Image (cartoon, rainbow, N blue to C red):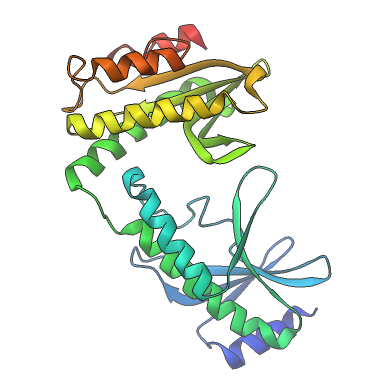
Length: 270
């Protein structure tokens, strides 16, 4: 497949404002589509198993479009993305590292402009859905700030040994805030915060469920520590009110929840 032919086909059928970059194994199409956070959308054309594949190259999942992350909105965002993917007939797959790729397959060159149009529209919708704040503004700010601080602390101390917002391979729909690998052992980490006691307790319950599911994983014998980091500086932190839920969490973890004000304890356990 000649890149010149593909470029001419796209410019003729799609948009003359489109530009192109030759990547190692793909032709990047920089479209004229823009997201609400002012990022131009790119799609990538490659040949895989003798099929023409138009893909986002995992950019949505890897956050190349630099969208904010509002954890409480995740379920709604996933429903929106599912609706877009259904409308534009977009498929998805995970690579070996767990990165999600969105794509369309073309049987001939003449189909490429249509696939580029559909995938670009899909990416705009998906990226925009991440940019819109659906939940309580105070809560989202609280959650994003704590998540960012906790992530930075773990990355500084564990470098390449930590994977953020990662999953166990056999339960990809259950993500932990972090998974730290040490001496071939997995250490599962969840974060708990909240601007109100109700939000805080929702996080506690989510941690309980995630650790419970982890016990059913085929990797259970490789799991070392199961730890929850709690934001004891948040307005929702109320150990007396949440005592019964904390007790349930303690039954699922290997250590008592670590207060953010005492975060150095993590370094003693992992």
